[in-house]
Image (cartoon, rainbow, N blue to C red; front, side, top):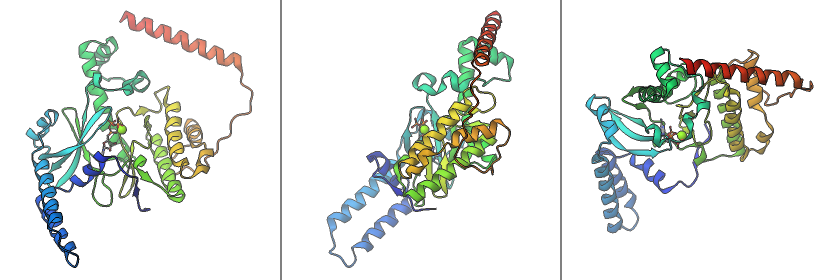
Length: 345
Ligand SMILES: Nc1ncnc2c1ncn2[C@@H]1O[C@H](COP(=O)(O)OP(=O)(O)OP(=O)(O)O)[C@@H](O)[C@H]1O
Ligand SMILES: [Mg+2]
């Protein structure tokens, strides 16, 4: 893979990445490294003292991080051994770096529904039905119990999608566990072992942008072949790991066959990728992969290896307005009948 050049990062992010390295051996190694680097040059005791102090502060900060309340059950149940630090606080969740035995992992703690933003909107949850009829009724009525069931369904949707996508060969973080509303997963890292940057934080040459864009288009195809549309794919939800791009953040993923918004969401996902990589390789702005992919999917011709051209032939057949209006009226009547039935339950 092409060498990854990070853009200058926001202050928090730089220290986040570096602090992943704390451990006594790593700290000592750093100090020894510093001592060596002074060999040959003028010895500067001030520099050395600052170096030793900063390593100690990092070490202590890592050791003494107060365990966030939501992570306590995982600690008690032995799923994690310690919390290294908070990695990010996004719109929907807080992400922590945790230690599990010899491994460093990532714990995503979902925010409660009222602290979250737009994504639980009906567009995304449409057709997410509970198989349990009591749950389904409670959810439809919006009772307190129903809201709790809905909340649990929302939180477990991401781990379900991660398992399904990994099985379909899509590069997503490997899920380890989902416990008490916390998703434990692989920490995606860059070549140096630091938390991987997002696409938005990386500079690309035109050639690298074309390659990354192609790789991600293939991943989108694989996802759709597994029946899933991401629904919020953009340069902020793709990490640039040491082995290439990794797609993250899937609680809103929609069922391609059962959600009426799946087509527009897929097209928007692909459009976001095109706009981002188009900044580095402007010829990508003329492509229409989204429409091409959906058309193949709709006609049963989409496979993970399907050849794509990035072009889409818009139909030249004039639109039969009468039929369209009739279809809309039918859909409206069906919806009215559905609501009436629901009100009678
Ligand atoms: N598996 C992972 N490995 C490394 N970093 C991760 C991982 N998962 C999440 N992150 C980091 O945490 C950030 C937030 O994660 P995520 O996008 O899943 O949550 P979110 O609350 O929806 O965030 P946002 O609102 O910013 O989209 C990511 O942008 C990324 O920097
Ligand atoms: Mg995100």
